[in-house]
Image (spheres, rainbow, N blue to C red):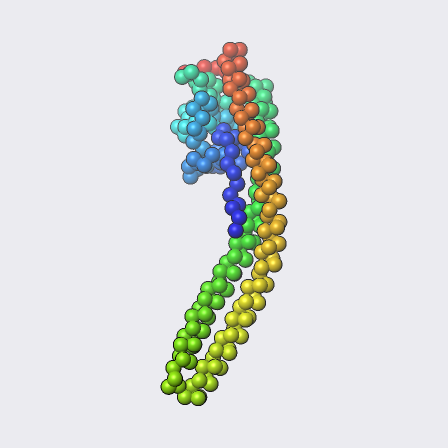
Length: 242
């Protein structure tokens, strides 16, 4: 069966991808803890973005979340970030809106990936069910093949009476009928499996296209966010908190 795992994208896109977890958004990076918080390896971009009390995106260490939360009021939307060893908070609504605009292309791609992923997941579930049925039938075929070999060995015994040989022949006939029935069941599963595989292939190609779009989009957004941080520090919009 083909690999259904979705390709991961750059850290820091957590909320931008529209995925939320208990304290924030689940994620874009494979280094994710049980709470859905991402540990990002991008050491030159450290921030925690509280969109509300339930939705958080971040790039940095898990401890940064608790640190940033100290500067946040209930239901307040803020951007906390670290630059040059200093910490800053952005509360300006226009700037926070600009941050959303920066991540919007990434979010749109992520949303599309999410919808496509649901389709792929459903097809994968159906393929898994068919695969389990095929596996069960294969196991039964193996068991019957062993029984068939045992009957053949018993028939090779020259000391058997005619009645014993007739009984073994009858058992072999029944076994062959059962094996033919299993083969028919196995063939009946081949068509729906091939149909599901055919439906999966274009979805895989589409997902690859989205993945290729995501990487440059994320790279561009992160570059723009870095520039925004520098601009807000210079203008005083970003307030130092340490």
